[in-house]
Amino acid sequence: MALHILLVEDDADLRREISEYLKRRRFEVTTLGSCKEASQFLSSAPLQPDVVLCDINLGDGDGMAIYAEFSTRRPACRWILMSGDLDGQRLADLNRRQPALPPCTIIDKPISLRRLVTIIAGNISD
Image (cartoon, rainbow, N blue to C red; front, top):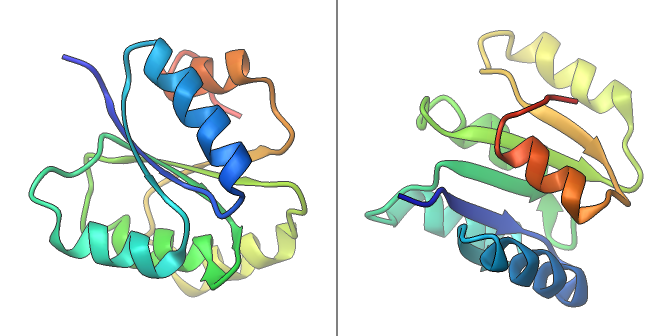
């Protein structure tokens, strides 16, 4: 059975490129472009993803807020947060405010799609 990945990325071209690459590798992919869409999906979808791959800096909000809100509700789900402009202090502040959050993987963009698949598959963590 293929992993179901929820991809949340506000850059439509990048979202399409990542999604198509993942689908060619036989992952099931649901794509969304905003915090609002991600919140609605994670609140109501009958089938929850195995992996959430979420941009941190989204046009309508913060992907870390999505992670903080939903990661404890979905303990079996792996979280991978990505950013081209990561402020490590934001993540440290979040971990200090909510120390019980499950672990997540943080990746810097750009990242090769081959390496991204390796991380998603769980073979290595960043």
